[in-house]
Length: 543
Image (cartoon, rainbow, N blue to C red):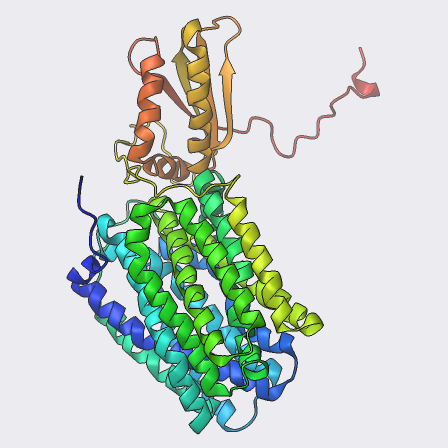
């Protein structure tokens, strides 16, 4: 049995080390800014809902724009996408600092600025997370994802406290300025990083087609759908602490900005502990058990925080919440990455972000409204009920184990020699594959074809059908369409080594000579578009 790689193994790779350290600084600035924004909103309004909307304004754009960002991550240079996102966020943060310093902020203007920063995060995250597979080998990928989570939460343990000190002594505008400067280190590290990208064999997909391809792939992957649903429920409920913590610190714990920062720091410290126990916990328990424990543990923390009026107890209750947070979310992230081939991993991660942050955005609004109606304490209790439901859902929709299937390209497809002069955009293309199947093999053949249908549609096929010849019952024809010839080539290049077993089993059942025969055809319109010949004979066309 191979030894489990150390959680620190990704640090062997220089590019990962430099980028990880740069993200620490950037995350520190982001958390300082978060404290400044959350606390400034409490000074601008007395509405719990408006305070909670600060968190929603950051997570909402991640939900809305992540799918497009994932398509960009899979079709453009990821380093360039990340640079654009980081530079944009630096500019927005600098303008926010100036506006705050001049005393021009109001609640809605603050939400607008945080929304724009969230847009930059939405653009950055899919490219950053998908780049982990480019920076470290597959065996180090779980460690890299965990280290990224640990790095963020290391800063969560000190960043909010630093932010609280800055806000308490220099004001929120200083916190916004610190955030603007923090982007410079990551911009410099990305500028230095020169990833080697293999030459593209095909032209880029159009943005709309690329987005739809990602949605189609995930929708035809049951394991991915299970992860997305659970991550949505977890995000919907678990965001309650981040959304209402400013109000809890102000109203129940009786502290100011500094106490709010130390509360966030305890949450981050718990997350660091969760990162360190992540590996041993994964070895001992299944993924479903880990998520279930994380949901129930977070629920207990919410109840304790809701009923606590003691500052020390409130700080202690945030430790297990932070650990459960990182255990669940890092497991969701790794599951998505290890269950998606490289051509679509950015889009799969973006859909995961859409589900998770969509849940967080909805939860921020819901728990803020509940807090306005019955108070933050009962809002925390209600969220704990949803967390318990998230854990119990696993009784019917258990989270899969990490995918051990080889999702590298099969790379056995060679473009056929064509006797027609086709352009890449020529089409539509119809493909038909002939199989000769013995009567006793039909049940097994149909089972394999059900899996074949899922693979075909997942990789871009349309109008898939399985036909049986009425005059030659042993002859079965698989047929499907693709819009253009380049889509047909792309469809075949998406085939993974994990799909080879289905292909070989179908070939084994084939009783004809040689391999199943493939017919590739281009559709041609034979009836002119302006043909207005009536379907029924008119009076002048009678017999």
